[in-house]
Image (cartoon, rainbow, N blue to C red; front, side):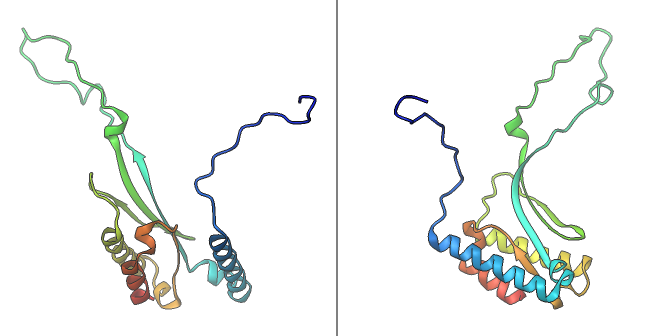
Length: 165
């Protein structure tokens, strides 16, 4: 620290600065959740379904035995195989889960952009998964937690969610 009492420091990056409207909205949602928990307890927690998308790196590992090939006695004894780059082995995956475990895992086709149309198709698959895995959850009212990405907050997505209740 110098004579002036000031010192240098590094700022930390945050994903996004929240506006007062966002802060108020989040506080309102948190208070609503607390109220529902105080009223319904564990029943409320068991109605929560959470979802998110992420990039997943995958490797198609091949054992030495699997990579062996037949060759003529005059063929070279060593085959060369190029390594895949990590970026070529990433895929977008959407996962939904509840208190009991995973409800739906959906791997996106390479080159697919997640827009409201794609997200609404995923929500329809989620509805079927909930019907198959969690009898009675739809009738008790699912509380869906997802971030506020554009496909999640579009008018079309809102219409599907209202339709599903």
